[in-house]
Structures are given as C-alpha cells and as structure tokens.
Length: 442
Image 1 (cartoon, rainbow, N blue to C red):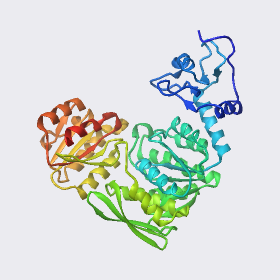
Image 2: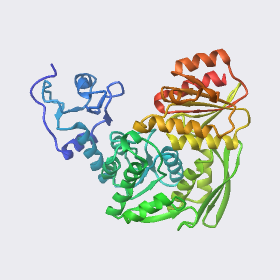
Image 3: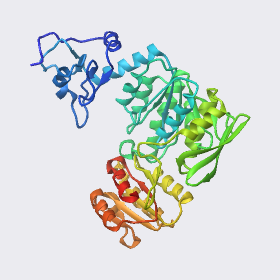
C-alpha cells in the first residue's frame, strides 16, 4: 500500500511551486530521485506508473501519475497525462526564466550544429543547450526545466512524425530557428521526402506566426522556397546571403581545416571534425555567432576546441586501422555524405562497415538497394554489410561480405583481424556498431 487517501490534483502553477523547492525532475527510478518530482510517463515499451511506489520509497518529493486506481498518498499527484503536465511545466518555467531560445531541427547535422553553436555562444553568453540527443517530446521539456540563469537556450528538436516539431516549438517558444537540411530520414513516419519537408517546415511556420526569425542556407533552394512560402523573416547565410559570412574547406587530413569569413575578419581553423559535409554545420554556427556579436577570435577558438562525441564523426587512429565512427544514426542522405566525405580524405585501402538504415518503412528495400548500386560506382576496397536489410538486397557478385547480425561480424573481425585500412563505420543507432571499434583499432 502507498499510504492514506491524501493524493490530489495540482495546477501548473501549484506544481511549479513544488518544482522550485525540489531537486529537479526524474522520469527514471534507476537514476537519482531523492527530492525530485517523478513523472510516471507512458511509452510504447514502458509505463512509469509501475514505478510510482519505488519512486516514493526512494524519496521523491512528488510522484505524478495518471493511474487513478493506485492506492493514494499525500505525495502523489493525479493528472490526465503526466507527459502533458511535464510539457506545461517546462513551458511555464521557460516563460518565467525568459531566455532567448534558438531551435534547431533538420534531417542531418542537428546535434553537431547545436553543439558548435552552443560552444560559440558560450564564449560570451551564458547558454543552456540540449544534452546529448534529448530532442523529443520528453527531452525538450527536461532540457528547458534545467534553465537557471542562462541568457540563451539552444534547443535541438527531433521528430519522426508530422506535428511533432510544431508541438515542440509551442513548448520551447523559440524566437529564432534553423533547419539544417531535409533528407530521406524517418521515412517510416513521414511517408516521403515531401513529408519530411512539411514536418521540418513546421519550425518556419511557428516562427512566422510568432514574429520570429529563421536562419536559412541560401544555397539550399528547397529550404529557401519553404521559408519563403511560410513568410518567416529570413536571415540568409551562404552564397548571396544577407550575412557577410562564408566558409570553405582548405584541407582534410583527415580533420577539416576551413577558412572562415566573418564580416571583415578572415581566419583559418583546424577542426576536430571529419567529412566535408560538416562545412554546412560550421557555416550555420559561424552565422549564429556573427548575428549575436561573438568576436571572430572567440568563434575560431570554439570551433578549434570542439570535439564530437556520441559516435558522431569521431576519428580514431588505431594501431591496426584508422577508423571514422559515425554510428549514431543513418539514412540514405547521411550515408552518401559520410561515404563521399571519407573518399575525399581517406588514404587507401578503404573499408566500409555499413549497418542497416532504420525507420525507412515501405521504402526500406528500395533505399538499401539504391545505396548499394551507388556504392558500385565508387572505388572501395572492401565492403562489409550487417543487419537484415543490406544482406537481403546485396548482389552476391558485388564482392561485399554480409553478416546477419553484429555478433556474426564481430566473430569475423576477431578471426580475420584486418589491418592497414581507413574504415568508415556507419549505421543506425539500433545496430550498436560502436562495439566493433576495439576489434578494428587494438
């Protein structure tokens, strides 16, 4: 039994008063929970209500639940939807703290762009930014509830269904935003590339309706057209843009060295990034820095100091092979960018280890086959394919090796111990391809 019949409902304002006296928010009883507000959120594969009693036993300040059949308790708050109440609480807190909010979405490059922007702005402005990949309907509220005295919040917004970016924007209430690009990502939820564009364009629509501004890459005709259709006020960067900002690649050895123009200032900087596709991420970050008046030398230092994490564009110089690990996500667009980028800077011989592209829906077979056909026109020394979809569409005459799962591939690598390659490891997060790195480097 949880306790006496003393549980209750609360308004957002009443809950906010409790939040200010709490140690923060928790949605997972496996993490620190003492003194925090526990939200019992439901998901496709979990139900936080199962852990309400555990949360109370571990000392949470309040437990928010939608289960009215649970025994009542003076530290239990009932609501129709704990998730909706969490989102309302986050929006209320954002309004109280009133920082400037910059929202970032797009098919590829969101996280790198977000981290570069946060690094640049934080040279001069106290900044809160999305941690890791907390960019969904739960992660965005949790991020906003971490606001303290920061003057700016850089919020990454991800989505795999139409309407989600609109909902996230209504929680975070950004005054500025950018869409990095639109590609063939999450086709299972969006249905088509046109569906992806409509979904990402929801950020432009929100900014247009609320008097905000969008930073748009002038070299991207698709996004320029979409921004124009929404009527959002545009800050155009890139060629022929309204901002006096430009970037170009100088070398890739393998790290990108770029030349940057900011107003009247020019500088060169060697980054910790590999792959020419990161140039667009750098351009967006420099543009934001220029817009907010960050001096060129601070922008240069922030770019030079940034190092990617979480299996994104990470270069590892191992004893046996040089490895580029880009295994946080994968879709047809990012696959081509990563492979094309590798071939620009890699020394021979080259090996590709590619895992399945998830969330492709009905387009999965076609997109995996099209990518392999595209690979057939490139000069690549060795190709290893792992998962369900790539092996199904791989032509046995192509010379590529196929593996049904990562354990099968791990056994092959342990036996063969390939050496002297520059290896690209690329696949969706569900494949866990980072497990292969020690077998390639040590």
